[in-house]
Image 1 (spheres, rainbow, N blue to C red):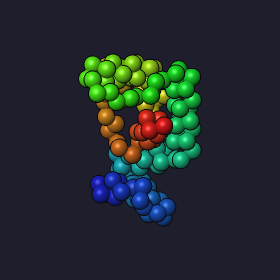
Image 2 (cartoon, one colour):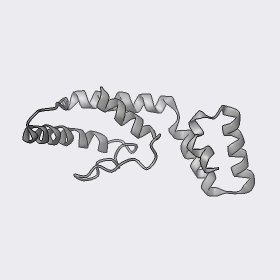
Image 3 (tube, rainbow, N blue to C red):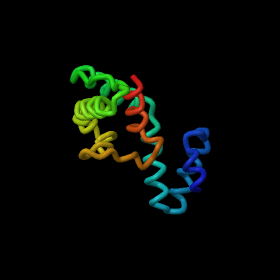
Length: 125
C-alpha cells in the first residue's frame, strides 16, 4: 500500500477508485484520510488558482528577484530582503503557511503537495 500511495499520481482513475474502495471496505481510516488528502491535493484547478494568487500577490508586494552576487554579504542581504517580502504572502494561504512560520524554512511533509508545486512555480517565475 505504501508504494501505491507514493505513486498515487501515476495511477489511472480506475486504480485510484479501487484504492478508495479498498480503504472503505477494510475500515482503514488512516488510509481513507490519506487517499482523500491525495485526491484533494491533486486537483489542477486549485494548483492553478493558488499559483495565480501567489504570483499576483508577489507582483503587488513588489517581491524582488532573487539575484546571485559574488559577495557573500550581498547574497545574504538579497536573500533576507527577498524572504522578508515573500513570508507574508505565503502566510496568507493554508497550503503554503507552514513553509516559513518564523525565520526558519520548513520543508513540506509531502513533496507532491499543491502548496509545494505552487511555491516552486512562484520561485521559478
